[in-house]
Amino acid sequence: MRDARDGGLLSRLTTRLITYGALAARPLTLGVRGLVVDPDGRVLLVRHTYVSGYYLPGGGVEPGETLEQALARELSEEGNIELEGPAELRGIYLNRNVSRRDHVALFVVRAFRQTAPRTPDYEIAEAGFFALGALPETTTRATRERLEEVLVAGAASPYW
Image 1 (cartoon, rainbow, N blue to C red):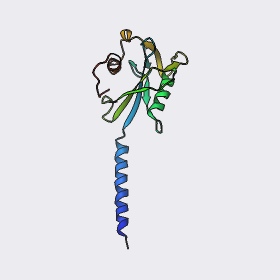
Image 2: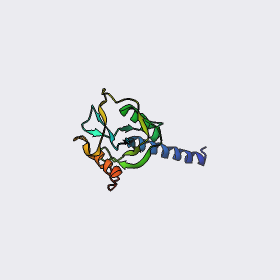
Image 3: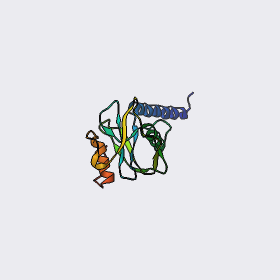
Image 4: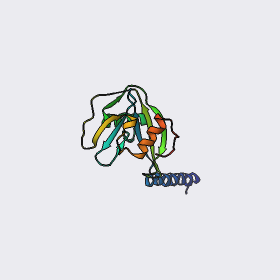
């Protein structure tokens, strides 16, 4: 004999399995970028070995990481940057160039120290601080737009 509550339990379990399956098939991705500004107003940009152009340092948020932990890890890995104070969350952007489910959290970093200049390796071809008026020619469109929005008070976009 089946209890009516068993049917409700089975229904709830089935609903959860369908929900989790849908999420697994369409995962949301989340990354962080750091707009690191030195006392002279220069910004840290990196050039990767596997993609062309200069970018703000950053990368994906790992399972179990907070946004702030991911930012600290990425800045350390890509620029030898250690945070010395809180970073300001500037915005969260939809990165529709990657997918309709990819988002980037942009932080502005002013309280930091660089432990040593970043030397090239298998991931980072170059990292350095650049004045806004002397950005590398191959600085990406999205990077230029975020610099304009944050440092020159341009119109903010919800898209990366």
